[in-house]
Amino acid sequence: MEQVLLIFDWILYVLFAINVLYLLVYSLASLRRHPDKPVLAKEHKRFALLIAAYKEDTVIIDTVQACLAQDYPSDKYDVVVISDHMQPSTNEKLRALPIKLLQVDFEKSTNTKSLKAALEYLDKDSYDVALIIDADNVINSSYLVELNNAFGNLEVQVVQTHRIAKNLNTNMAYLDAISEEINNSIFRLGHVNLGMSAALIGSGMAFEYSLFYKAMMSNTSVGGFDRVLEMKLLFHRVFFHYLPDTYVLDEKIQKTKNFYQQRRRWLSAQYYSLGEFVHHLIPAIRDRKWDFCDKLFQQASFSRVLLLGFTFLFSLCLSIWYPSLACKWWVIFGLLLLALVVAIPRRFWRWRLVEAVCFVPYSFLLMFINLFRLKEANKRFIHTEHGVEE
Image (cartoon, rainbow, N blue to C red; front, side, top):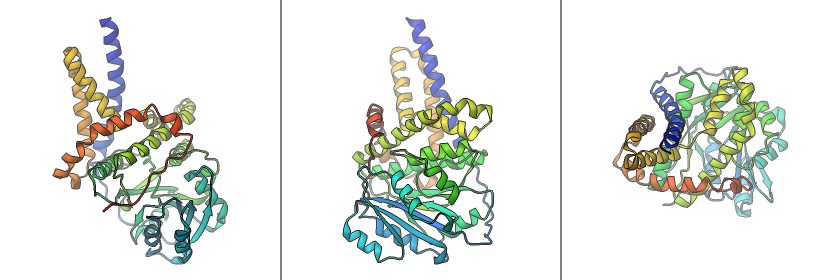
């Protein structure tokens, strides 16, 4: 029995250690910054700003107004709002603005359906770049100029911008903002610093229009359309660039209920895309599609909260019942903490961070429960309510 326990312990340890070392390598890589000299584009690309808005009456007007206030030629971009189940009064306000308003009424709504409807509605040849903006996002006036400069490089087909917190009004929002920045450090900046593609995040991402059209029209995902989208594009060797100094403000989760629902949707999308693309692993290794393999590894990995919680619990339990096996677990737990600490931007190092960290055990519990409700989550669209509470 003891031999079986020892074998099982080492199998688990190796799996967890691989995950931890992966995070640590990219976290340390994110410390290296190469300030790029701005290159001005020679022409203005034509942008389609696509905003899928499902019951987003509270936030949509502010988002649209920010999109309209760009220091960019107004005839070179269109703001396209796909209004799904929004109030008539909200739609009337939107009609008064210089945008394209597409009203849809899906029985089972998803972002995928809304974006595909917009692509069918728009003239495919009228745009060079498709920009995906969430209904709660806010961009600054130089946003399109900076994106246009990026696409001035003919090699650039996909760009992910830096999504940051719009609100820090609750401890949960503060923790969510830190989580977002850890993702930015490890999965975006750290990756591009080592020559790998940045991860997409669902909004603040721009695509060569024809590329996006082709990839989205064959996308049937219920939630997490960006997960399926990036797997498809990476398999075809499309590289994702990252603009760390081009910001899009995104509303952070304020309540534990919304955290539970949002992470449930994210976990479901993660494992759905893993199941959809895992059979491509061997061909990808054969053809040296390392970005695709890297993304597939991410989809197969535990989320950071689950990884942190399980590593701590294993370390603690082994310390009590099998002290001789515990030491190596405490080592990788310490390395995991180091990876996360390095990835947190210095501006978040305040006393408030201590209060936010107190929510981590509860977050782990919610994520653990979510593991048993993934199948149900992939059958319907789980909407996260928006609107910053005062």
